[in-house]
Image 1: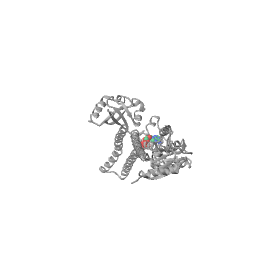
Image 2: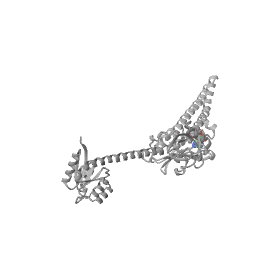
Image 3: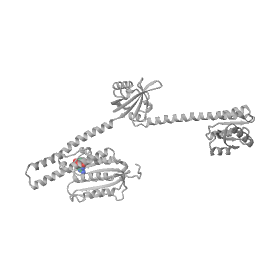
Length: 486
Ligand code: ADP
């Protein structure tokens, strides 16, 4: 069966082109062919379809084979370009071959044409295969390089003989503080706190006895130490023994574990106080004769302590959620003025012993956040201002805009906070006067929650206070930029 062949013939002579086509058909090709004799026609022929081979005449009045070859190459063609000519000088033929023509065939010896085309097509296929293989190799190298550099764990490749660093990824440079060029050839001793212990492990790794080191102290460029988990594996490269070390910084995990332990012991300690009171009064009432008025009093205490326990648990759960990183994807524009009003309404009817003023423009631009959490933060500040204010005091709830943030302010005329307590009051379970505060049903979790809510929104919480005159608590929350992605 004839082989299909798409041939672009570049020739000014219709008759010569026909002869060529006939020779190729006879040679066993099923032709798809056109003839062109100027650059514009050649360019549009190349643009219109792919060609397996170009066969160009050498002597055309208006088009030279050099120009045709240049167009063939400029269009990215790597297929054979064969010169078919009547008489051609040796120098001219050599020059054309040098500039990229693949072969040269005399028109009066057309028997050579078919084998020449077949050979050139074979070579072109070989070139293409080679190029594809090279490209695949480059892509795969690129892919592994990207994987290596994008990996979030630090990776270091060490020479097993010299124990020096050969290569590192980006995460390693960021973790240790060395630039990659400073890292290369760095002795491994420089990045571990106890090289002897690590060497023992390395020998174990090289012998295939272990593949990980549970906990080591590693050393950064600034000499600070950090705990890490290491896994490693040996391999050979160009006859050299190497091993790849994957390092995971576990300081954050250790911090969270410590935080959980602290939290657990604080919680059990703090919860014991209201529980002891509840159990004490219940037992007392079960064991003793108590009159109706006493009973009401004790029930009141039990109710208050139970509420305190519930508030403590709610606050702790919210704190945990916030620390676990809570969903910014659910943030919405939150209008400030209604937020302040809604919070005041929650308190408005509770007591008439204080006055609440709102100092905020009604058209303040919205902030971006979680409306419920923000209300919880303002609510905590307002309830503190009321709790720690004298009868008849004024509490002001205000907001203003500053540098892309809404600054919410809760101001009271209460007892104030001494300078030595100012730093601590945003810490968990911090209470200034424990006896008084427990009497008021305080939990010591309100302000830590305000601080976490501010942080989770990309803002801050802070306080200014003058003892005896009052306190001003602030909460800064970024304004809504209208960018829903952030
Ligand atoms: P709680 O009020 O439940 O004890 P917080 O975390 O809200 O817990 O507050 C911590 C401590 O900070 C309070 O116990 C109190 O001593 C002090 N504090 C908070 N707000 C005020 C305020 N507006 N005026 C004076 N002291 C305050």
